[in-house]
Image 1: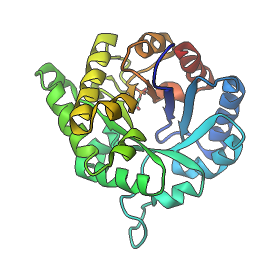
Image 2: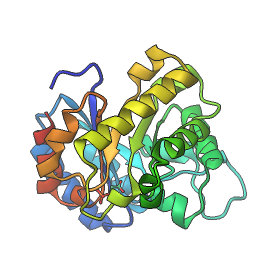
Image 3: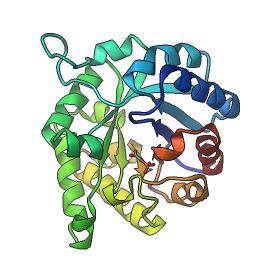
Image 4: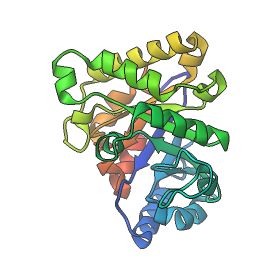
Length: 254
Ligand code: PGA
């Protein structure tokens, strides 16, 4: 696939996998995906498995991601984890503002933006998730919602930081539901997000930002989604929990 931007495919393991299970999965992925150079590969295990997984992928083409981070750097924030602590485990990417965190932890665009700044401050890369719920799509408000989320969630990032940020478009109605956005819906949303970035920064920055699609990505739909001009990768949930399905998504995307 001939694209200006290198594809980035990330597995969001959510609250799944013990350390032993995580090591099994990542050993399989290492084996299956050893030859892949065309795609940036990322796995985001739960915090408890980061240390062990980081040792296993050190000599591989797989990079480590985390699923959340504190917006604070240090101090009395019980239960929180700072970006610099993630860096200790060779984490490179941090997923921010996933719809599950927006819904269950009431994360706002403002909070996501502060977290993104904290992530960049230690030279990690945020993967910022945005996406509309079904009622918003059905009432024709998708673009308005995406614009508000993108603007609010990248507020305060410099142009250089923006270029090193990944956006994940994840229509909430497609997450874990088996319903995927059609390729037309995905491409239209991605193009809209890129236009929004162009208006916030400029065309050059907007052209460099990678925009992943997420929401029931499977081996069978990966190729078509990834063939869209503004779709630069995938953020995969359910299908990232098994070696075969995640590897096939990656291989089918090339
Ligand atoms: P899904 O999840 O692939 O299971 O739909 C995607 C995500 O939530 O990132």
